[in-house]
Length: 124
Image 1 (cartoon, rainbow, N blue to C red):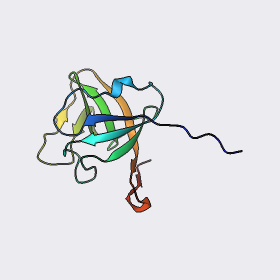
Image 2 (cartoon, one colour):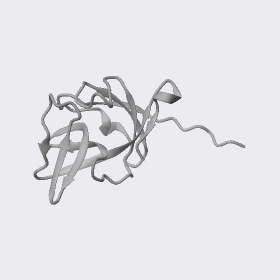
Image 3 (cartoon, rainbow, N blue to C red):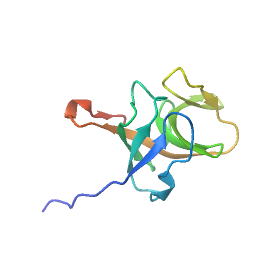
């Protein structure tokens, strides 16, 4: 007998200008779908793309993460340069920010969903 399907909640978080997303309504350890807002992660992640985020996946160098930093929740690429940690947009029109002080990785993007199979992409 096949396992029943699990529903994954879809939340939104900015990929452009930081602001408070509604990610905090999700369970701490359950994967969730995220709708990308803005263009800071283009061209890989366009405005409106859906990504699957795993809160249990550890953040590693160059992983795409959802991070709480400086009072905001934002989608960026996580960069580790020795002791330095940065959150980097893929769109050069936005600044890379060095993390200084407290931050929390809310999850790592593990898949970009697509309507067609060829549009889907796995990151882990």
